[in-house]
Picture 1 (cartoon, rainbow, N blue to C red):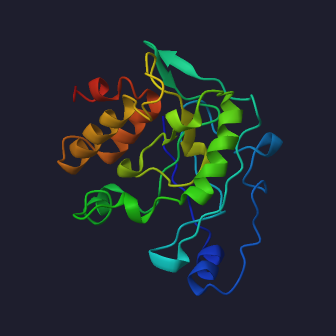
Picture 2: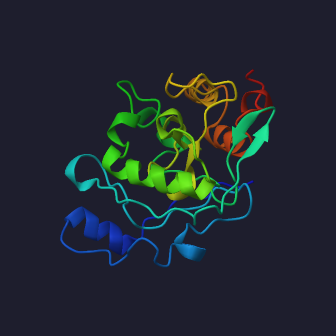
Length: 223
């Protein structure tokens, strides 16, 4: 499967850099799909994001907007050996154009960290998480479900594309009241270490986690 990176239209990029004009794009415009949800690509394919809320550089120019989610009840969880997987038609994944094999040292593998500077604020992700829970029909405690980047930020996933975010329910057997705890996070960390140490490529790691995060490590010979 092919991962398609988000392209920033030159006019929009110029506007954002100058902070002097509006993109004229709104959530649910030409970049959205049926019922106001994201326009998904083929099943299991990571697609490019819309041009709304594009993060540009560091500091005050980088802004995020609350993204529209798929229609309530339109997404279905899948399970592999009891572990929850995303609905690939709703959450196919999306990558950041800033993170490539050539830019690893200055992005996800740089000393001092990378994700803190690009993570959207709770004022954005909070409303998105509630809406996405309705998309997936999740009725459990939101505090014990993770609003998860399918392609994690440490693997170059897009920070706030609705097609890269889903409410990941707790693992089966999760003890209520213990907060968020799932088995996908350690997989992401191991893939990140493998990419930064040269044991696998960025693209291979991204494709493996989009295909099935429960088998991503074994698929790349890293388990």
